[in-house]
Image 1: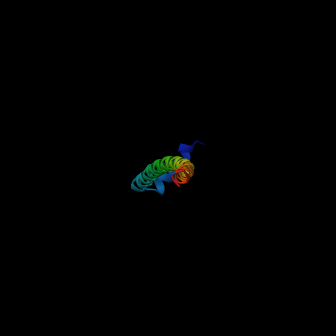
Image 2: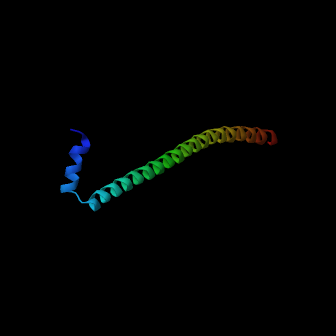
Image 3: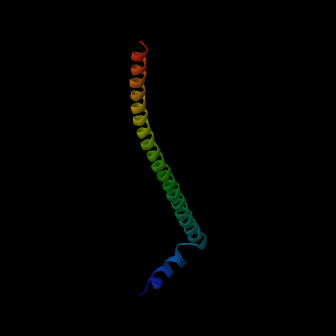
Length: 84
């Protein structure tokens, strides 16, 4: 017995064509929704990665600024000592 021989009598007796069409449309809609949701998630992951890279660069810049500020303080102290 093939699948068609099993399914066809069930479709003929119990499920009207409109119901089958509704199930197919609903399934297609669910697949479309899942695909668009996956694309939105991928977009958010890419932007989150870009933000993490930017945060890492900001952290490096902050440490460089702290080093520059310390050097500037030493230079100002030396200048103040020479003026006195």
